[in-house]
Length: 314
Image (cartoon, rainbow, N blue to C red; front, top):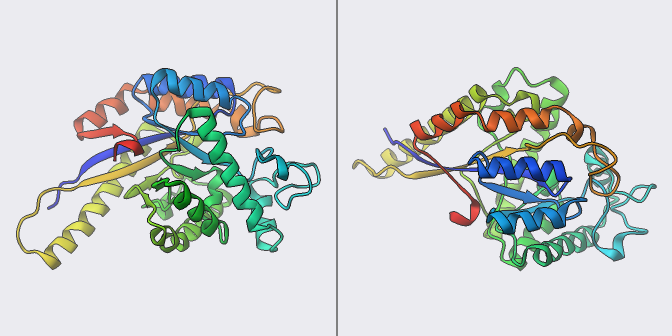
């Protein structure tokens, strides 16, 4: 049986959302609980986040945002298909609705994505090590093609494809949320070929839907890793046996765990231009922080020889 070595990327999303999010993510990084971060360049505390990443040498990528707050491209701040009547992005579900109605201009999506990469470079001094999408907008129909073009044009090698092994058997996920997750999964499956054609890579395994917010626990993370690694090893063994009957060296499997730790946002501070959302103000952010820093989880990584790393280390 193939024994997989695990390189584990724990990505703290929404870096730059507010000072308290930044504080929590940095604490997690310094404690060895997060190994990689994703920056919201339109977040109210993005410049502070970039400075913290430099100070603490935190590996950082771009959390491309087309659904919450305001655009960073000056030309799109008025009369753009990306904006609702109040002059902000359409929102998590609103973006999907407008896209499905064919009302979004892909030229404006590309313009905004490029503006966000440029601002990221200005803030950090380098191109993102990886780039994913806030609220998984990067795997949506049409958007996925533009997103892939931008990554290829800027030479950004890594992204996230949120297809989570074992998701369908997670009975604790409430039905409305599961419906959203299954939509994300379908969009992701339809995106694989597009990203592959553009030479973009991602972790072998993604985890983060079943372990988000109140659903995060030490046992859930352990179980998700064990399930994913077992499924991966079985698949690899079957391929090895098919093509080579000789015993094989164990290979390294890369896993990305998407997390959202931090201290709850206190309004009116925070957000991406229209104030903080409910999730950012909830106890669930602190719950994630405390779970990720639990010594039991740290010792589990050591016992299983799970090595924390970042996309830039791959």
